[in-house]
Length: 392
Image (cartoon, rainbow, N blue to C red; front, side, top):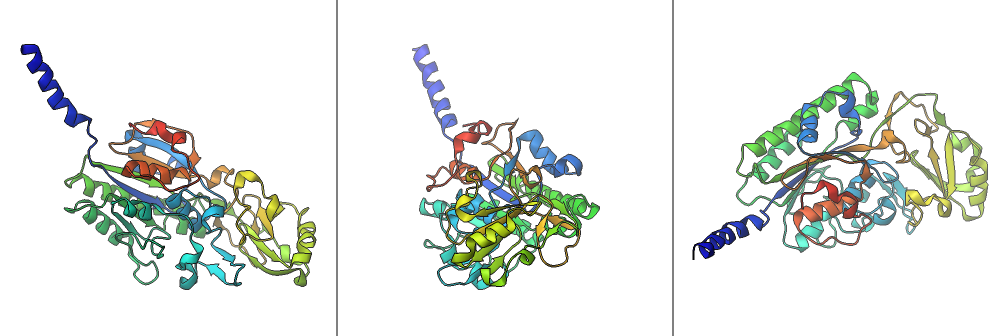
């Protein structure tokens, strides 16, 4: 009888411990935060996350630009597959130019394919709050996140985003996932370069804001139930005035309809002159030139019809540009360049204390779905590649 009672109490107290607690996740993106900024800048809180949890870096998708990669983080799809192939490009169906500077095209759902995590979660009974995550203010077929703010018409300051995210996670009915986007250190990196003291100060300020957010979590009712993930979309490298490629001077104006962007440059050619454009540019130093169907497979950038007929990808630190170039920082280059790699840190009840090699940013969507305990939509990621960072 004594043995039976002992077994009874073991079972009674063991079963609840086996049930996974209802954990919550906050993911914060620091735009343009290179993976190695914490190696040469003072970032005490980011370093704290590395000590307590996962230290790694993200390999961005091509091109290593802000909007394409934030939507990749949200969908697990390469830009070639989710449709936001660059910060600006031509829609071949109607000739419209998608541009981040045009609120109409930026929030037009026809450009956004795939299923972002806030829609996947909503379908399966979870709540997601977003604070300026790129793409979250676009009305997709299943609507919006449970909370979102239009970036252009209802712009939140950094402090407001921290306050609202803190209030949400500490509220009675907290969302399962909170997604927060910050413009720094990208803004300073562009203006001053990645290794300028002003960029250092910008990153230190963001580190302090992360600390404030985490302090608010720790002073709230869910201090032991929150996973914190800090990511970035891409890195940053230095450009100088002499490192530019004026490709227009090699081309005859009647060969092409339009050139969009500089990292890469998308050249929309008249059909009969695709080879003429390619041949005129292919031997110019400090760049690689491809016809769309010849772009290397590892870039996953050859099936979307809105990609230019000829794509010019400059070497790291160079620009395809016909105007004056000022010294500063740029990104958009081949993800194989380590300067383009982005930050990844994570800690919380679902994460081990470990360090792993840099991994593809398409895996983040699957990771978020795992943490939310929901089934992911079809995507290009693979959770198996990073399962070593998880406790379960």
